[in-house]
Length: 617
Image (cartoon, rainbow, N blue to C red):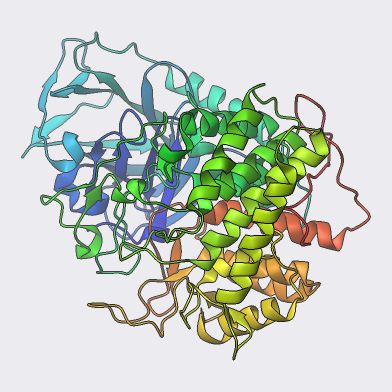
């Protein structure tokens, strides 16, 4: 039985990531990269689908945990009647093979510890051949995958499981290093675990010291930034939406999706979160991944890509996995990659313009690409699409999708005016005006004076909260005030915002269809910042941060009835929204701090903040 979603911690090496439970069990790890098959898949099943647990052998244990400050190094302290030990878990960030290092350090007394290692390649399906080599190295192999474990502790095989028991006294430091390598290659070289610990501490501490945000939520913002860095695939700069697949949006339900891919939807928010906090290099790497991924014809642009820009993300089900707390089916891959989502064009144009404003170097042919993209968008913006939330029913004319088409032309116009680029400027302005006119005519409910989810609908959609942030309408405009009032009346539960309107009927589902969507709650806070109600914005911000786990990590959603985090974990979009909302509140409380122009290259000046998304016209 897996732990509660919020009871997990994240460790990673910027190529993949693992989830560690409070009880010291690694229940999820895809190796060697985020989108690989899992070798530990107990998160979506049982311990027999793969896990690695190190914990006291006896019960009655008190547990405390924390990250070493400014790092992704996890410390889990076990307090027993016989003594106290700390389990240190981390993954060294390096270019060579990938390792999970676990060090058991005795603090006082003597504690009997147990180890249980179950490796199941193929996401819980493949039992490997296991043997112990002459030098004591534990070796497991199946198909293309190989892992080796090096430790001074004697290991035993029992019922297709590797087990051990060992005593830890005060001052002891007992290491375990599990290393992945492709099975046809030589055994990976051993690393020095203590030297790797010190190098990892130094790397993360130096990285965290670059954070320029100095607001009252610094610890939460820094933890969110570290999480975002951990979800970055360093070789390409791509950032996965989450390191997990098929954690349910509703406990026991079937809305279970694979999030180990990179969404264009998050492009501008990601760029702003990184740049505003001082991480221009990471923002540039993300932006460069983005441009490589979408290279080619705009007609072939997708809503998401693989970590290296792969386009075929075929969706399939794993029937051997019973699912998280029985939530089935368990899915890998994501069929939504083939959907038409018009909002991605606005996200891409906005991200490119923000990159220019941030001083990120762009290819000399980038403007040609932008003009080609807008030429294509002019032909398709009137089409129905699947919307930002990837509805799998018939396409509709989603209001946010149309607004993001407006954003695409608006950013193209502003780039042309500011940088002197050649384009059919007056024509683009006419298209922009036409889109606005259509949205205002068909996307507003006349009775409530509120924007609606789609043309002809009376239902709401929390994505509408983005309209002021992207500059389509002022936050204090009567239609936007009506939208906020309607959302707070119909889409809020226990102070958090639902993504979908619970009044809407859906075959086979009863409302609420999922937990409250945490990023949307933060988007509502951003609207209140723009409207000048900082007090209300802070209330909403604090409501979201209150449901973070003890380590500051957040999933996609929160079930207010069960008081449980739900959805894939940790969720990049939630942490990105937290960073941006904290920045927005801090800037609103410190208006004397003028946004600074960025240098052509390098990181922003100390304490400098980039401008927020476009001011409303």
